Image: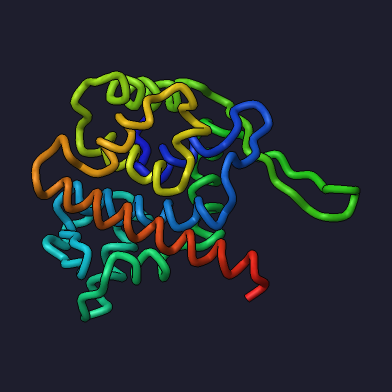
Length: 216
């Protein structure tokens, strides 16, 4: 089955058996928003730089989340920075919608329960390993030295920005991850997209985390 970059990121971000997150929502939610922007850029719908997000093509891709995001950006009517859009797009609701889609397609299982018999909680253990296995194979190949395609490169860059790479791929070379995350291996357009998303998600995640830590 076909999944978005954001959904690929989610598969890497959740423990297969326990169905719990490997990183905090303050890191994951901005990364998911960045993944939506990056996929639209990879597919030629947006152009990203550190200063602005520009709509290049309004043709729908046939995915509800991606098409809704593209329409929202077009309707804004004003060019904004990637970090601005990451801030607007990120939410626990987006994460829940994507997790629900993966569960409805049979990739994950939605398991509801309560902590201490009172507080509701939901776990998302893996139901079918094939989709994540294919993602991991692509990422592992790139981390081992193969030239990644644009989708794989932005996935690695976003995982790195969210500090997920060390948890999902603990044996990977830090230097190789950094090389891919900085876009040094590829054409200018993709490198620019990677740099914009990496910077946006990293800044927003750090800001949210700092605010949470100080009680702001």
